[in-house]
Amino acid sequence: MPPKVVHHMNTAHPGMSANETKALLAANTEAVQLSNAAGAAYRAGRFEESIQLNREALKLKLKAYPEGSTQAAISINALGEALLAAGRLQEADQAFAKAIAVRERAGPGQDAAATRENIGALREAQGRFDEAREVRARGDTKSQILCGNENCPTNKMYALKGLQACGACKSVFYCTKECQKQDWSKRHKPLCKAHCAKAQTGNQPATP
Ligand SMILES: [Zn+2]
Ligand SMILES: [Zn+2]
Image (cartoon, rainbow, N blue to C red; front, side, top):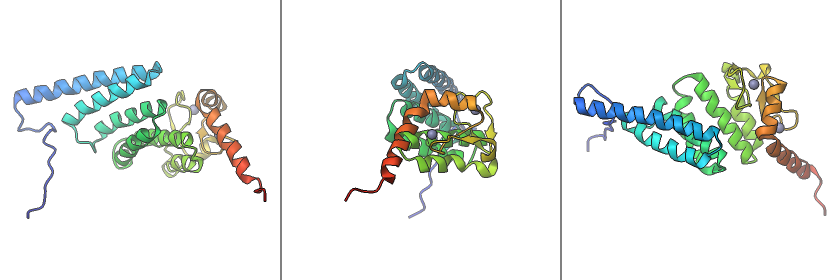
């Protein structure tokens, strides 16, 4: 048997007819519009709607790009963010796993850093704080760690020494006190408190 060769026949190529190329461009334009609508729904807190729109955008993108492309990874990462915000942790985990595999191999370092930060937030939601720290710190050698505040105004990447860890859990890092304060009230507080309360109970000697 000859080896199986997989072609991405749906990617734009010179052999395409004018109509095929036109259909592909239209699909890409629609994908961008859907992605923008998904982002707007996410920012408005309509996470289920954002999930749906991201899935539709991804479906269209996959007509033009293979699943392992940096273009598809943008949509897969955005889908993961919406799933995480909706509390659908297992599905978010699957999406981020796909996105990080692409982004740590190809594309801008900032994209990989963003997905690592997303995975960090997911691990916190799963109560896996050691792993949250580990995945964020993975960017240290290249100074590619993002501030843990989703709305950080600097949007820069840092080495660990340029950031301050949360004093309680030491699993998330911030560029300023202000960013820490914002993330504390918006996201981190209940997760950190639950984790630290559990860690304390765990440290108490067992009753005979
Ligand atoms: Zn910041
Ligand atoms: Zn903390």
